[in-house]
Image 1 (cartoon, rainbow, N blue to C red):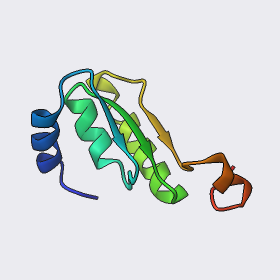
Image 2 (image 1 turned 90 degrees about the horizontal axis):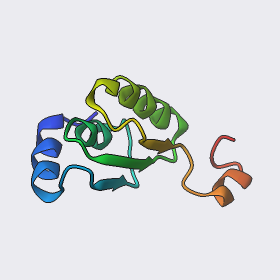
Image 3 (image 1 turned 90 degrees about the vertical axis):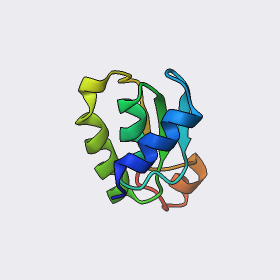
Length: 88
């Protein structure tokens, strides 16, 4: 889990409220949490199902910060799911 302040700093300066932040390597969801706190929309993907679940829980815990339309996917592509790389 990465510290939030650097992400809040950079996202606050490089994006505007309502912008979409895309994180292709979401890990535990730190960028998503920072995005929500700053009023940004968030789309994250994570290949590792354990990390994706951790990120989902963290994002759900941030529901008081608005923008509840975020998406967190454990699998970046249907092809990977078919090959058994990602859980169904």
